[in-house]
Length: 253
Ligand SMILES: Cc1cc2nc3c(=O)[nH]c(=O)nc-3n(C[C@H](O)[C@H](O)[C@H](O)COP(=O)(O)O)c2cc1C
Image (cartoon, rainbow, N blue to C red; front, side):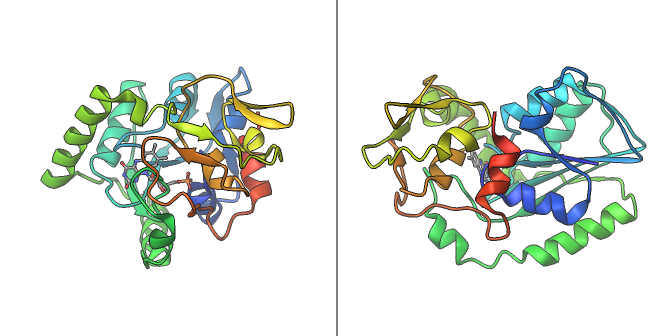
């Protein structure tokens, strides 16, 4: 049994490669009773600034897992910094014993810093990474990936920057421009239902959000931009193995 969160399909794709029983966290969170039992339970999550997205944290805080083997796979783009250590410590604080935590490098969908067209052109050897993780899981390996000194340093720098400038990373900089055609896709891929249509145009409900960038990356008109920094506002990303309908099904509120 796998629980995943995915804004642009990387985690959704990896979940499907690892297990036939996958459940989307934004959907599961609609239920009150969050007790799960299985021989093996996994979480597949993106790395956000070295940590886990808030929606994944809320799920872990609310859920009870009864299992003999609990694992976390964190997909990331360019720097996994302290991801596996951070995620396993977070779970252990909730009383969850983590047996395996590893990371998997994929396209970096963080639009403020990366041109996703350039990202797509890099061969990150995903099948090779996945094969190692699959073998580890089959063997029920006990392993928590440890951060490098450089990873720890980068994590601390990013943490200071986002603490001093929360507007960079809390969704405030997501701007819906006049290019909006009113198709409503952003309202359906947002995992917290933070966008609605008003007079045929998309409008944010709250100023801040998860900042998962599902709205911007899945907008067919490229009408949603980052107002502080958008590396290439013409480049947007969805994992090539995942359809828009699958993202909607996973995230729609
Ligand atoms: C807010 C935010 C923060 C991110 N922080 C990191 C990071 O610290 N390191 C990294 O390598 N990738 C980072 N990423 C990239 C994602 O972790 C990566 O693209 C992930 O595979 C996306 O998964 P998804 O397609 O399932 O949403 C970040 C992305 C977002 C939206």
